[in-house]
Length: 141
Image 1 (cartoon, rainbow, N blue to C red):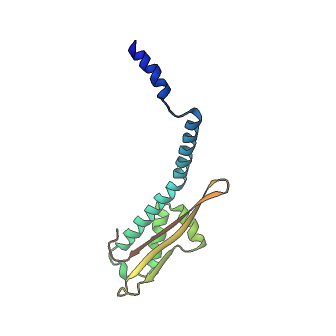
Image 2 (tube, helix red, strand yellow):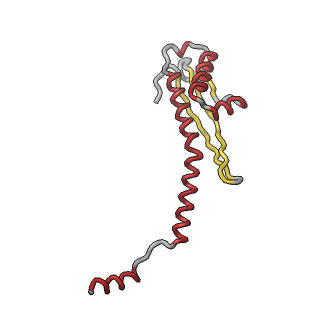
């Protein structure tokens, strides 16, 4: 009997989220989930680009190869790995740049710099900016 009296007293002190509060929490959760599902593939693709650049930089004898060979390797990797967003960007402008380092004893640096615009809701879009660089002939992480 005493336990039921305590439950009646505690019922007034118990609080929780109302139905509308739960709807708001669910809506915010759905927005975060949809954002992650939209931008996640772009980050996975960038990880593939980094892996590709690291493997090209680690190839034996890559230091002495021509820039035409390096760009050919990039195109081969992009076709094999299905980097379609980067292929679309490559058609408009060249995201990959091969240059000599100023203070590096004629070492070559391969850089990538590109942006991905992803529409989200109405007139709201995500603009993702990706940059990475490796030195050819060295093991990069």
